[in-house]
Length: 464
Image (tube, rainbow, N blue to C red):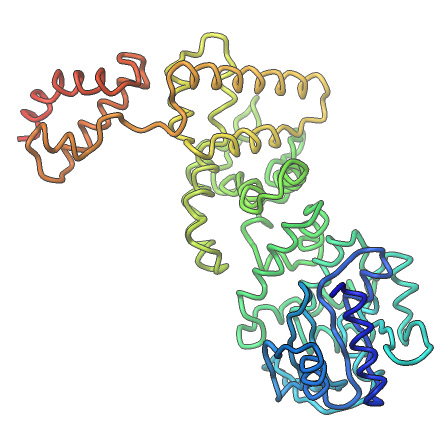
């Protein structure tokens, strides 16, 4: 059944049962913006769960979930996620996001929504086209985010709406109305109250900002409101990090935003975008001013990589992505020196081997890292990267180095050398790999095995 038919079917049941029901929230907003949405929220004057059960029964299916306490029910049908909810008003305790709920009317229900553009409703069973108590349609036309009630109440009741405001501004390319913006600044510290907002919810909103078409919009708003100091303080510390009186280099924070947007133009890969966000995160702690040169940041790549585990744990990010992020941070400075004419095949091999499956992502990140406003410099940098990429392809094709690992594995080394698992096995394996990367032997099994016999006795002698 098509979405329009599903909505017509729900409207028919509401009419037959003489129930006032409305489509509300994001579906209405997106419809007015000419976008499609598979999330349909149905607000019911009365018992939302009972109405949801009636709809499910008529469609010869069952509800996916029921939350009697909140008067809501979920139905997954035809590729749509349909939520039925009783119209209600809510009151909040200072130390909780869980509200006390009381059944109410449509105006109370819409007033508790986060923003006016989400406080619109389409009646399912009368002739009114749109219910709009808070001028949400006007705000939609003017691309403005504002709260239906006073911002203080909206953000006090649910501080996660602070993150949602910034996420919607980034997703929709809307501006935040002045009083709402001030409310975010005044109530941002509510996000630090763990019993009110969980870190997981904050991180989810942050990563949704990273998924937007132009993440810099949301990231800059996080900084301007002071929210970044709370949710990702290491990024805030990048602001102004490369400035000193008459030496005016690029500001590391705004350079980072450009890099993120450059990556976002090339890929939807969320974790490559995240790598671009944190690639310079070690700069504040490694900056040193050298007269005649300006700021230097030696070792910021290694330090930045080592900072990641603590950040991942604090933000509740998936640890299976940690190694990927660490690798890209560690390697992001490696490609550009390889553009020099006298660079050896060995250096190219080592980069390709170290990057492994992440080589393509690394090169995307490195290209995105070129943010010079000088057209000549930018042209030179891009030409350099093209040379590096061409060399990498040539060397990889010649040496069969993609996803490189030693042709002779650890088990075979242990069998030939009569060794148990030990550090010595790793030393021998690395010696073989280094010989291939340095061009001493080809990347072939027979050559590697022959080389093993040539080196093993000396290494085994030293290990005794």
